[in-house]
Length: 84
Image 1 (cartoon, helix red, strand yellow):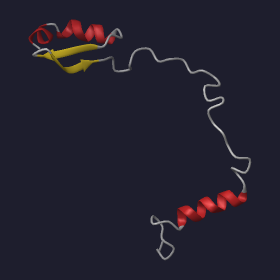
Image 2 (spheres, helix red, strand yellow):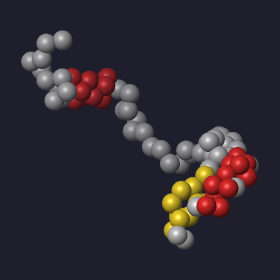
Image 3 (tube, one colour):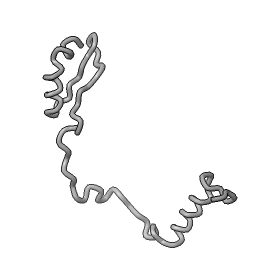
Image 4 (cartoon, helix red, strand yellow):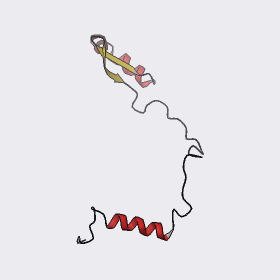
């Protein structure tokens, strides 16, 4: 901990450069310095969800939308006898 206090500027520079700096007290980790933006963000990949998501053929049908509206508006959040 004492060393971290005396070397704080250097440790912050290392963290800003992308390194995770663990600060310990009595040999036990108590804090971690990390860059605010988490380092360089990974570029987005097209198709990352391919094969991981499935939608029923009727996912946007009138029947399904009516059921969702009924579940929402007739739930405990919006009981049928509540005034709007």
